[in-house]
Length: 163
Image (cartoon, rainbow, N blue to C red):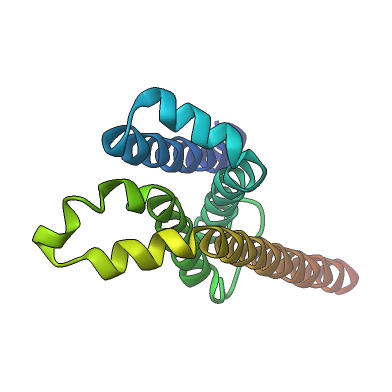
């Protein structure tokens, strides 16, 4: 049962992250335009949208492994929580930016025309930055995991040598 939890927690969290970010992307674009436009836009930008979504899922899985100490005892999870939050936020802003120009007709009423124009103009930059931050988050979490694993192995060897 313990082994199943160690696998199911990160797998479930990663899949939930993938599902939620995908739903957010398709939900926003579908509301702004149409379902067909959402599919077309996803296919057009698949080279950056798919890695963003997948990377966010991987980040969530690694964060759960660190936070719940599933495979090794982790003393310090470092900035992994902040990186997961920043990566997810940047990815969300990038995905909102992709369709912000479609809702520009309504935004003057809300006083957000400049924001919509800014987001639409720099959409790809936001996506690439989001992908970079997500990648950095994954790398940092892997470094923390490997460092803590090495510490645990050294401690194990030391405890074994002492009679």
